[in-house]
Image 1 (cartoon, rainbow, N blue to C red):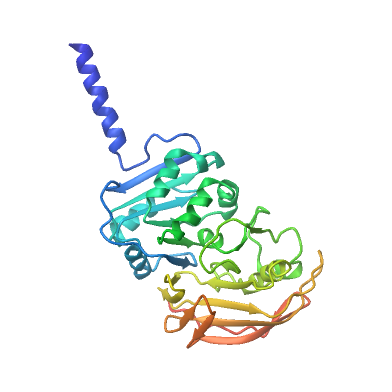
Image 2 (cartoon, rainbow, N blue to C red; image 1 turned 180 degrees about the horizontal axis):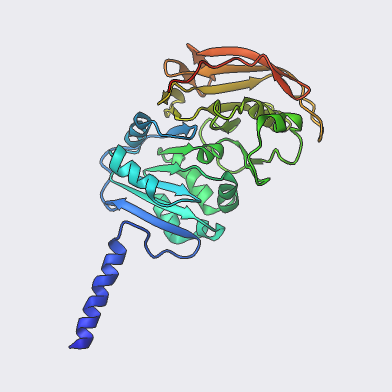
Length: 336
């Protein structure tokens, strides 16, 4: 009798563990969190879309747009630090989705874990959180996770990235593999140096093959470093251009390539289009005569296919001489 009671208690405990929304028993290499009904059928069709977020606080209208493109179904959050709090916010505060599952990677082996891959296969929308993009490169590049992220958008499903999550979506990525996050003066002083750690052949997103992305853009004065990244990228890719996104802002790209900016604080997206290819030597500062910079605001139109901007907020031709940036257009002050 005592043995039967013990078995029933153990079965009840095991059931509670499997049903728990917080971190379940996961193999070494990742932690897992879930909230909502992960088994419910997706109520609407999904659509291919990109949500390019500059970091900081989220624009909720952008997330509602993303949830709609995900068919109001199942969102998967991928990260390499933190816990399941972002999933809780998406599900409880923003709403409009059936479930959110969060996978927090701590080892490259997790990128081949069958459970992780099955969760990604089931995702209606994928959100790449902020953190350290070097960990994303180390854990995911050349793995089944990277292949599934590429396959996800080919299936007509949306993907989003904020901060480090946006940094890895471009065809050329600043991987921050030097252990830090380089600033504009340092990058312009030596764009061919070891601190400009660009990564290629990682993710392959629609219309981003020749794009280098950057984040926290105006707040951290990153125009100079994005220009330095483009100088290095153009040594191999003559078509490389840059897109920077301000904090609390999101560039929402539809399946046809048309995009609108959504922002909480009046921020912008920055389209950076240099001319030609500069000569680079390790240890030497950058010289580059013509770099067009265009500001995309909430009332602007932007086509990621043609790179055409209608109603730009600002536009101008910057130049770099001796590693110093001149004539860069100034963005209007952000609303606070």
